[in-house]
Length: 158
Image 1 (tube, rainbow, N blue to C red):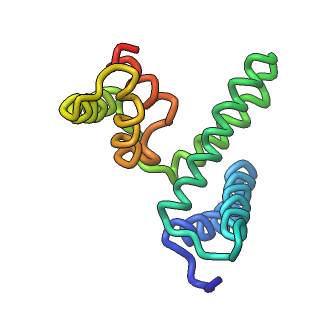
Image 2 (cartoon, rainbow, N blue to C red):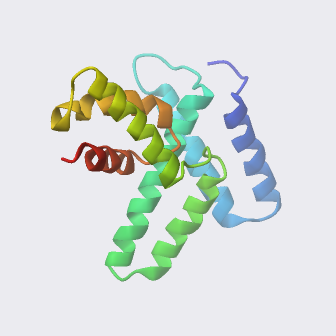
């Protein structure tokens, strides 16, 4: 692995240093957690490699999803203080994720792909795979997968 970090990874390292100097415990621990997750991803598989910015964004998205799910689970269990901590970590992660698509933008993207699938003759549940295949690369990191799938199902009427 080379010593040169990708832009996003370098920004994370720089922000970790800044948050440590500012004694911001939540921000520091969250950025450390993300950098650890990135490092684990880099050494997983058959050979170590440097992650690209889109791959780092994927790791960030995965960690953000974990925080959302944990906050919901803590709320359901009546542990508000832990849920608040998870939401605070999620807010830190949001600074590094791309701007999320609005509901209208997501609806428009899915509608385009549904129309493209219909042009090839796929409709209903059978078109779900084709539509998701077209939508997924266009919304990578900008929308939650379950939200995208729900919108595709809604538009396909299944």
